[in-house]
Length: 183
Image: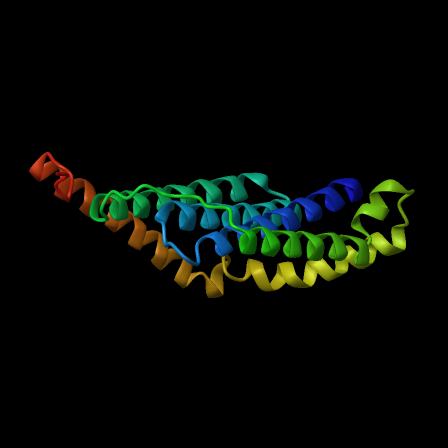
């Protein structure tokens, strides 16, 4: 349990770093693909946290599949309305320095929180228990979003995705075309 906890925390930090990097790319030119990629990384972080702290892994897998399918529905809607523009990925010096700066912050956080050091040496149960207690408080705040008293917004967003899927399919099947003509 302890080794898996440390590995999963470092993976979560890596995904957070990737979200920051994608947000820096997304500043100049808005692209639905990068936005969807950020949302998938965020869904992965949420599902990894839920699977770590919940005894039932099936709940996190189903939640991930629902969120990713909803993202794909919204991506389908946007891609049928937005003009076809080629995505140019220019890695300029400013972007590279921002990425290196974020990577160095990531490495400093790993060093300060002793994730990598704990993985290399023998596990000290006192330090690991502190990490577990720290994460359990975050988890209790996070899980409220998906459990009974506060899950209304999650259910409403899932219903919105389902209704938008049905409406997009209905509009496209009536015309037997996409929502927008490609010239």
